[in-house]
Image 1 (cartoon, rainbow, N blue to C red):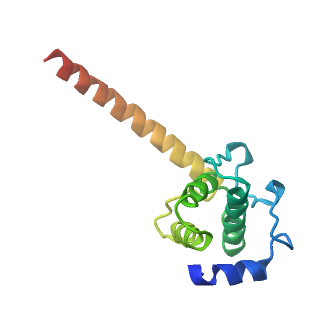
Image 2: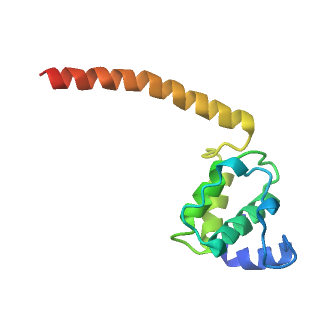
Length: 135
């Protein structure tokens, strides 16, 4: 894994767009373009998100679909610089626990599992709340 100290050197050598401009159509293929929430980043912040995700995509070509990475990177960039943000995202993606879905099938499985858990536990929670209110 590349540390944050080497991120700048890695990105300069990687040279995604040939210059510092990153356009939206040059985002990695795992980004869901219909779900790109920028969280009030300015244009420079959005370009930083694109740079971080481009390096992650180059380092991890096995990621085919991960719609949450754009959003999480945008949020992290409010509090961290690009190199530290890259280190966080790269660590989360490389973890053996698979905090993020990295394929369409795993994303759909997570969605269905969460839906089932919410259905089970919201009914139980609703009945508990009704019992408490009646007391």
